[in-house]
Length: 509
Image (tube, rainbow, N blue to C red; front, side, top):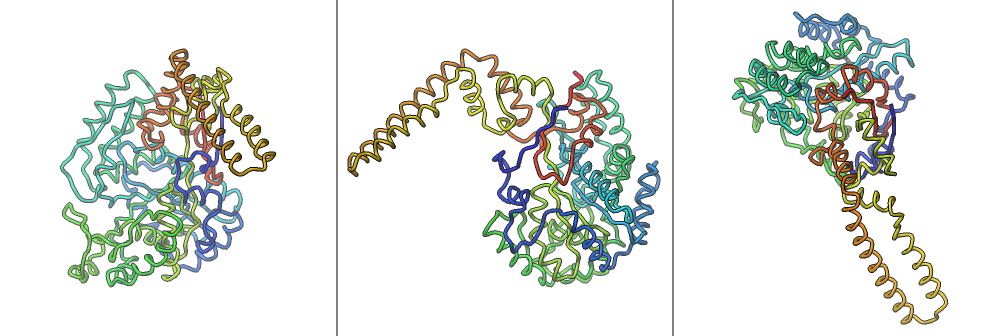
């Protein structure tokens, strides 16, 4: 497998915050956010100073796995949660149809690999990978579809409210469409068989847990559904403070400081909880339901800014692995955690991965294109290709002319003549750039078939101008690379290497 690693900054497609975070270059007031192996033991000690109800956590998770044929490694990890020497490495996501975009898979592999690394580094402790099921999310339109070979496969339902509670029986219609699409591909068929079994469960939460246990159970990945009455009792004190509007000023003040450097990822509201029930998830806008919700915490639902706090209150967690937007809104909460005496976890940016079929990478290299060119726009890629083929480097000639004009300016003791020379140089530069465009236009016809192939590869990496990890689904990988693709990815993904990963496994087609 060919492997390339490049900085996020060099791609030009990530936010300024992610560029800075990945290079440990955020403003001083934000503190040290990136991972350092020397921070692990201090983090363990500070987390142990926080009261975690491990017995309750074990009991709740065990009850959520009841009736499922649970992998023995998962069972062992659930039992380890009761041990005060056990800590979680957490990620989470919406309950996407068929696992949704590829970064769902990358996030899980990241928590597995970091847990394994820490278990080897600190054998006196236990580190378990934990997946937070975002069962209370209500943005159904974000999770109800996948894209495969240019087509959209969508789950239609009239259900509303928390998606984790949705009945999944209608998904069998989408699975049938996919069977018809994939034909006789045995690897993908096996995956669809798994999905068919999963979506016979009671609801979307149970189905997603089943899928994760089947695909990742051997690595000990534990799932938790936070939509539990006993767990939500733990966040009641925070809920009371928030509904009295004590917390939003703290978040807003710190967010305003961040906003001078970066675009904020999450808006702060006066009240940051929802009320759920009867197929609804509604904002709490006033104190009308306060007493009712205090007595019935199962109907409390944290928003995007309260969810991290809920997580860190109930979990023995020391690190959270998330995507760029997640790390950005987590960073808005540092002063809030400190104010509430809740330990703030180590934040780790998940790997972004670009998969390039081996035959496509060989073609790319054969035509003297670099991996960094994947991230240029198509016109720029085509120009680079044609310049390489025709050895027409206009910039080289412009640099030579510039040296000549600069030398003349130095030797002419006249400001007016210097201005004339500079003006003449810019005219020459403009003429040469025009010639370059004309030459490229002529050569586009000469190399038309190659340029079409380049465009096809570019579209595989950026389908619909979106990074493939946000568009492709695991079904696509099974079709192209086979059922061992997860093992191949696990070999290469390293959450502590803050670079974008370009991989080219050999395809099976």
